[in-house]
Length: 172
Image (cartoon, rainbow, N blue to C red; front, side, top):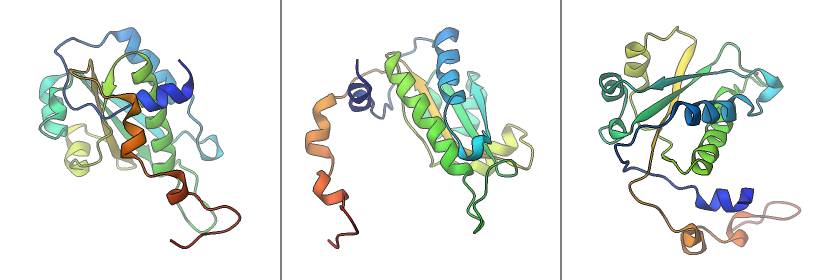
């Protein structure tokens, strides 16, 4: 499968089977994150893999806890690169790592959903995180209970002419 086909196949999965995710697959997913690029190669991330049901319920939204695994993506704002104007690239770097993971998850015939709507303060407390680590996203994953049509992008995504300008910004 080409990278573009893989990108089109990836979708948000919110319903999972009870089948556990194999350790080898989790390692491949985490390796995909490890090789992700980051600003100034700072790699300001830490990934916490949750398989314990009680912990998943404490950090997740109600449906996410039903996934066999949740990866908590944390960013270290102290070690992240900051642009001269002060812009912190921690969240951007974490997002690139999550994107790498979601593509690997799809390649492994698993499903996931990138979750940002969660209580990051509560999650940090539950996981006893040091102050500089912020939970940025949750990635529930497992075997999907259903699949989406890869051709859905033809009708569900904006056309290129609505999102691209050439040689300067085109006002809508």
